[in-house]
Image (tube, rainbow, N blue to C red):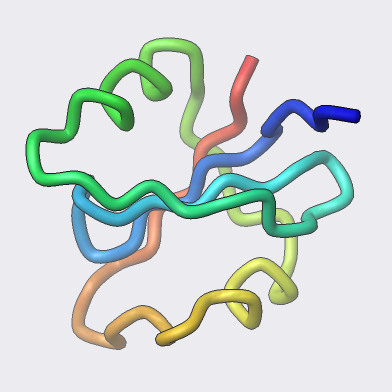
Length: 75
C-alpha cells in the first residue's frame, strides 16, 4: 500500500526535505543538489505551520537551530 505525502518539511534549504503522511509519520527524505523534486512538490503545496512536534522529532540529524524549518501542506 502506498501512502501519499501530506506534508513537506524543508530543513535548512531546499536541498533537504522530509515527506510526512496525514498521520505525521515520516514517509521519506529527499536529498538533492538541484532542487528539481522539491520545486515540483512546492508547486502543489501551500505554506502552513508544522502540524506537531512529532514531525521535528523524526528528523535525524535534527535541523540546525540557525535555520528556519518550513512546513508545507501538499494538495
